[in-house]
Length: 168
Image 1 (cartoon, rainbow, N blue to C red):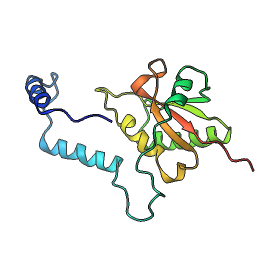
Image 2: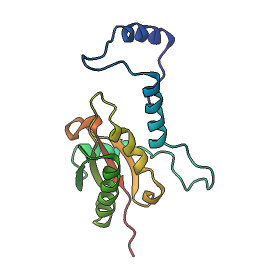
Image 3: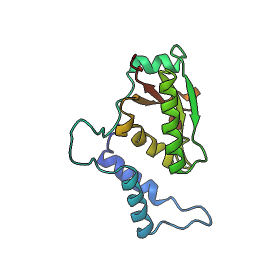
């Protein structure tokens, strides 16, 4: 989790931000565009609905550090990879859910989901994917997530730990 900026850092950041100008051909965002951006973010990360506590996950747990290390060092196999580059949100979500269901059914314990970082490091798929993975209908599949190691895509990819399939 990111720490909030200290007041002196905010002041310095304000001075730096004041020197930034849009690229040629791009206008400074208007208040209406900023409001639309915040509305989109609210749709992607809706507030937790009231009701049954414990049934809806607000966020996923991180993969335990030792397990993440084993995945990153290839001591625990990445069963499958999914690249979401170029997909719309709806298509990416459907593809991700089908992929996770298939990986779980095949008994994989860890998969790699490549979201990309977006143009400025704040891509829509990168922001939306953790929320999709925390969906109630995936609680029996997804154990946790973590950013991937640099050689697996770094901030543009996620390790997804899957739960063990119950024998039966």
